Length: 458
Image 1 (cartoon, one colour):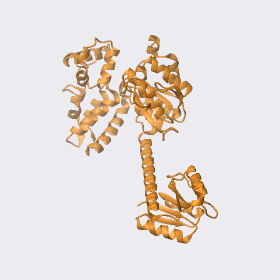
Image 2: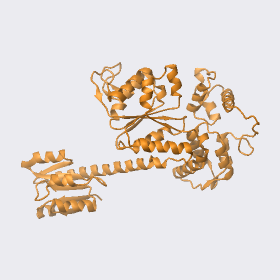
Image 3: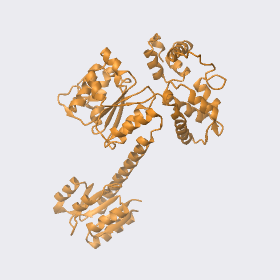
Image 4: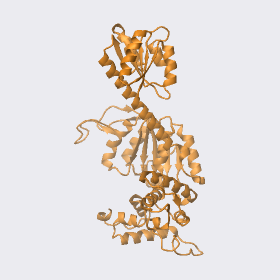
């Protein structure tokens, strides 16, 4: 039930409005002055305040200016005589939702109050969404007590309240976008947009129009103006994932955004001022790209004002049990399951696995295990097909030689064998190794392995 407060120093007017609004199912309170109305607002948090403009003591505009915005600001509707409409317009500039002229028309009154209630409900939903996002992406909620994760979290806490650009480094699947969102939702920009774009996933000829927008006639098929992602994110945060894949021309334009805080739409003449914080991420060795001339040095140093390095999961194994419990709870809720935990053998296997796909792969394994598990706890048989373990004790069934092994060479051989078994189909080879296609292809190129035919990439 929506709550409406009527503030008017005329008793008859208050009574009439209360009778009408009560009859429509609203919970209605009344006040004879602005001061009394302010007390009721603080006590009952009404959705709508219907107030007279001219009152002794605190008038309607002063009441608007005095109402606190927490826990949320009600929709203010001003009632005014015809001769003071200019004052009502001034009230709207001060934050009023709408105004009504006296004598009031019942139908207009009810329509206006209904719209004001809808606006208040929308504001409440937005606040609840913002709170949910803040709770979900709060920095303190990031899982990990390993040394490297503690260091990363400390940097995130310090940088969130600043406007500095951030460069997040880490392998695919380590949670770079999660970190970017956490920084955004713990910053002063949290109520503004967060926009993520994968620079490697959009063809070069489309990337600039996505980022900067375009004017009519900028190119064939540009039949209307389009606002780009940077302009649409004004006031918020733009996350450039896989920034190492940005084309050279786009790199120079992003540099201009960082230096001059302005953009120009494709085909446009005028520059447009923008206030956008940029957070970038990459799994590439950017300094290696610099030496090859593939990435602009000036852009690199603009992006890495602050650097957050995320360790691969194989280097933070002490965090795996906590991550498993988090995903177990998540997918219990999602699938309506009541799995209580994970047995010792399965936990040992998960901790000892090398996790080429990092946290993303771990989540996928737990998701499938929860879905398929038919007992009260996850055991080794629920996960071993995903991890490609032997039938032995749940880990690779051989002893390490005294001189050790070359893990990178072993990984190369496994990838080549998987590609052979998959008939040259990279996506299938990735599945055989429990990797995402993106991770598999990144590491295949990193090792400079012979590329399969183009028609075998999927």
